[in-house]
Length: 196
Image 1 (cartoon, one colour):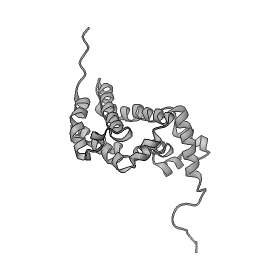
Image 2 (cartoon, rainbow, N blue to C red):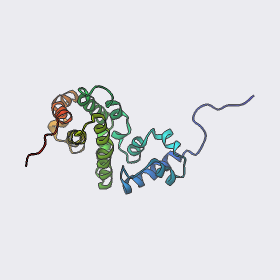
Image 3 (tube, rainbow, N blue to C red):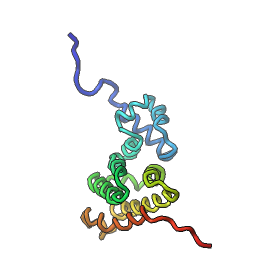
Image 4 (spheres, rainbow, N blue to C red):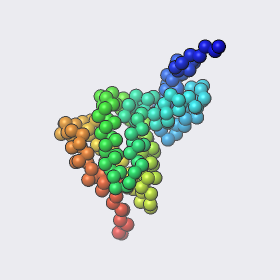
Protein backbone atom coordinates (compact mmCIF):
# COMPACT_ATOMS: atom_id res chain seq x y z
CA UNK A 1 0.00 0.00 0.00
CA UNK A 2 1.30 3.45 -0.92
CA UNK A 3 1.65 6.06 1.75
CA UNK A 4 0.35 9.26 0.13
CA UNK A 5 0.90 12.60 1.77
CA UNK A 6 -1.85 15.18 1.39
CA UNK A 7 -1.36 18.91 1.08
CA UNK A 8 1.15 21.02 -0.80
CA UNK A 9 3.67 19.21 -2.94
CA UNK A 10 7.08 18.80 -1.42
CA UNK A 11 9.82 21.01 -2.71
CA UNK A 12 11.96 23.97 -1.88
CA UNK A 13 9.96 26.36 0.34
CA UNK A 14 12.13 29.23 -0.85
CA UNK A 15 10.98 28.91 -4.46
CA UNK A 16 8.19 31.48 -4.12
CA UNK A 17 10.52 33.96 -2.44
CA UNK A 18 13.21 33.37 -5.08
CA UNK A 19 10.70 34.01 -7.87
CA UNK A 20 9.42 37.18 -6.17
CA UNK A 21 12.96 38.47 -5.66
CA UNK A 22 13.91 37.85 -9.30
CA UNK A 23 10.67 39.46 -10.45
CA UNK A 24 11.22 42.54 -8.33
CA UNK A 25 14.66 43.07 -9.80
CA UNK A 26 13.39 42.68 -13.37
CA UNK A 27 10.26 44.83 -12.91
CA UNK A 28 12.34 47.65 -11.43
CA UNK A 29 14.97 47.36 -14.14
CA UNK A 30 12.77 46.76 -17.20
CA UNK A 31 9.33 47.98 -16.12
CA UNK A 32 6.05 46.08 -16.35
CA UNK A 33 5.92 45.85 -20.13
CA UNK A 34 9.57 44.87 -20.54
CA UNK A 35 9.41 42.01 -18.04
CA UNK A 36 8.14 38.66 -19.22
CA UNK A 37 7.11 35.66 -17.15
CA UNK A 38 9.70 33.63 -19.06
CA UNK A 39 12.47 36.10 -18.11
CA UNK A 40 11.47 35.95 -14.44
CA UNK A 41 11.43 32.15 -14.52
CA UNK A 42 14.87 32.13 -16.12
CA UNK A 43 16.29 34.56 -13.57
CA UNK A 44 14.82 32.53 -10.71
CA UNK A 45 15.94 29.22 -12.22
CA UNK A 46 12.44 27.72 -12.25
CA UNK A 47 9.87 26.51 -14.74
CA UNK A 48 7.45 29.28 -15.74
CA UNK A 49 4.52 27.07 -14.66
CA UNK A 50 5.59 27.71 -11.06
CA UNK A 51 4.82 31.41 -11.52
CA UNK A 52 1.22 30.59 -12.38
CA UNK A 53 1.10 28.13 -9.48
CA UNK A 54 2.38 30.63 -6.90
CA UNK A 55 1.10 33.96 -8.26
CA UNK A 56 -1.67 33.21 -10.76
CA UNK A 57 -0.50 35.66 -13.41
CA UNK A 58 2.07 38.28 -14.36
CA UNK A 59 -0.18 40.85 -12.67
CA UNK A 60 -0.24 38.85 -9.44
CA UNK A 61 3.53 38.41 -9.58
CA UNK A 62 3.99 42.15 -10.15
CA UNK A 63 1.82 43.07 -7.18
CA UNK A 64 3.41 40.53 -4.87
CA UNK A 65 7.02 41.20 -5.83
CA UNK A 66 6.67 44.98 -5.43
CA UNK A 67 4.50 44.65 -2.31
CA UNK A 68 1.56 46.30 -4.08
CA UNK A 69 -1.34 44.43 -2.59
CA UNK A 70 -3.69 46.56 -4.69
CA UNK A 71 -2.44 44.93 -7.91
CA UNK A 72 -2.42 41.28 -6.87
CA UNK A 73 -6.16 40.78 -7.07
CA UNK A 74 -8.05 39.95 -10.23
CA UNK A 75 -10.76 42.46 -9.30
CA UNK A 76 -9.96 44.73 -12.24
CA UNK A 77 -9.92 41.74 -14.60
CA UNK A 78 -13.34 40.77 -13.30
CA UNK A 79 -14.67 44.31 -13.85
CA UNK A 80 -14.13 44.27 -17.61
CA UNK A 81 -16.59 41.61 -18.76
CA UNK A 82 -20.16 42.83 -19.04
CA UNK A 83 -22.07 45.58 -20.75
CA UNK A 84 -20.27 48.78 -21.73
CA UNK A 85 -22.82 51.01 -20.00
CA UNK A 86 -21.93 49.54 -16.60
CA UNK A 87 -18.15 49.53 -17.06
CA UNK A 88 -17.53 52.76 -15.10
CA UNK A 89 -19.49 51.47 -12.12
CA UNK A 90 -17.73 48.09 -12.20
CA UNK A 91 -14.28 49.72 -12.42
CA UNK A 92 -14.99 52.11 -9.55
CA UNK A 93 -16.36 49.29 -7.41
CA UNK A 94 -13.25 47.21 -8.15
CA UNK A 95 -10.90 50.09 -7.29
CA UNK A 96 -12.63 51.07 -4.04
CA UNK A 97 -13.15 47.47 -2.90
CA UNK A 98 -9.56 46.56 -3.70
CA UNK A 99 -7.81 49.59 -2.25
CA UNK A 100 -10.08 49.92 0.79
CA UNK A 101 -9.38 46.32 1.83
CA UNK A 102 -5.67 45.94 0.97
CA UNK A 103 -3.92 48.06 3.57
CA UNK A 104 -3.58 51.42 1.79
CA UNK A 105 -0.74 52.36 4.15
CA UNK A 106 1.35 49.46 2.86
CA UNK A 107 0.57 50.36 -0.75
CA UNK A 108 1.45 53.99 -0.02
CA UNK A 109 4.78 52.99 1.55
CA UNK A 110 5.66 50.71 -1.37
CA UNK A 111 4.93 53.47 -3.89
CA UNK A 112 7.11 56.05 -2.13
CA UNK A 113 10.10 54.48 -3.85
CA UNK A 114 10.69 56.15 -7.25
CA UNK A 115 11.53 52.91 -9.04
CA UNK A 116 8.42 51.18 -7.71
CA UNK A 117 6.27 54.16 -8.68
CA UNK A 118 7.72 54.09 -12.20
CA UNK A 119 6.91 50.38 -12.47
CA UNK A 120 3.37 51.01 -11.17
CA UNK A 121 2.84 53.75 -13.77
CA UNK A 122 4.06 51.29 -16.38
CA UNK A 123 1.48 48.78 -15.17
CA UNK A 124 -1.30 51.39 -15.45
CA UNK A 125 -0.15 52.42 -18.94
CA UNK A 126 0.47 49.02 -20.45
CA UNK A 127 -1.82 46.61 -18.63
CA UNK A 128 -4.83 48.58 -17.45
CA UNK A 129 -5.00 51.08 -20.31
CA UNK A 130 -4.53 48.40 -22.96
CA UNK A 131 -7.16 46.13 -21.43
CA UNK A 132 -9.74 48.93 -21.22
CA UNK A 133 -8.99 50.06 -24.78
CA UNK A 134 -9.36 46.51 -26.05
CA UNK A 135 -12.71 46.19 -24.26
CA UNK A 136 -14.00 49.51 -25.62
CA UNK A 137 -12.87 48.95 -29.22
CA UNK A 138 -13.21 51.50 -32.00
CA UNK A 139 -10.91 54.10 -33.48
CA UNK A 140 -10.77 56.29 -30.36
CA UNK A 141 -10.61 53.45 -27.82
CA UNK A 142 -7.08 54.34 -26.71
CA UNK A 143 -8.03 57.98 -26.13
CA UNK A 144 -11.06 56.98 -24.06
CA UNK A 145 -9.05 54.39 -22.12
CA UNK A 146 -6.35 57.02 -21.46
CA UNK A 147 -8.95 59.40 -20.05
CA UNK A 148 -10.44 56.60 -17.94
CA UNK A 149 -7.05 55.62 -16.51
CA UNK A 150 -6.50 59.32 -15.74
CA UNK A 151 -9.70 59.39 -13.68
CA UNK A 152 -8.89 56.08 -11.96
CA UNK A 153 -5.28 57.14 -11.33
CA UNK A 154 -6.45 60.47 -9.93
CA UNK A 155 -8.81 58.67 -7.58
CA UNK A 156 -6.07 56.29 -6.42
CA UNK A 157 -3.65 59.16 -5.89
CA UNK A 158 -6.04 61.50 -4.04
CA UNK A 159 -7.77 58.85 -1.92
CA UNK A 160 -4.99 56.37 -1.15
CA UNK A 161 -1.46 57.45 -2.05
CA UNK A 162 -1.39 61.16 -1.21
CA UNK A 163 -4.81 61.52 0.40
CA UNK A 164 -6.85 64.68 0.25
CA UNK A 165 -8.81 64.59 3.50
CA UNK A 166 -12.15 65.40 1.86
CA UNK A 167 -11.80 62.45 -0.54
CA UNK A 168 -10.17 60.01 1.89
CA UNK A 169 -12.96 60.56 4.44
CA UNK A 170 -15.78 59.72 2.02
CA UNK A 171 -17.51 56.35 2.30
CA UNK A 172 -16.76 54.14 -0.71
CA UNK A 173 -20.31 54.45 -2.04
CA UNK A 174 -19.98 58.25 -2.09
CA UNK A 175 -16.63 58.01 -3.90
CA UNK A 176 -18.29 55.91 -6.58
CA UNK A 177 -21.22 58.31 -6.84
CA UNK A 178 -18.99 61.38 -7.15
CA UNK A 179 -16.37 59.92 -9.52
CA UNK A 180 -18.90 57.93 -11.59
CA UNK A 181 -19.97 60.74 -13.95
CA UNK A 182 -16.35 61.68 -14.76
CA UNK A 183 -15.40 58.08 -15.47
CA UNK A 184 -18.53 57.46 -17.56
CA UNK A 185 -17.78 60.60 -19.58
CA UNK A 186 -14.18 59.45 -20.13
CA UNK A 187 -15.25 55.99 -21.26
CA UNK A 188 -18.13 56.95 -23.49
CA UNK A 189 -17.32 60.37 -24.98
CA UNK A 190 -16.21 60.12 -28.57
CA UNK A 191 -13.21 62.24 -29.48
CA UNK A 192 -13.99 65.12 -31.79
CA UNK A 193 -11.67 65.87 -34.69
CA UNK A 194 -9.51 68.88 -33.95
CA UNK A 195 -10.13 72.03 -35.95
CA UNK A 196 -7.16 73.91 -37.27
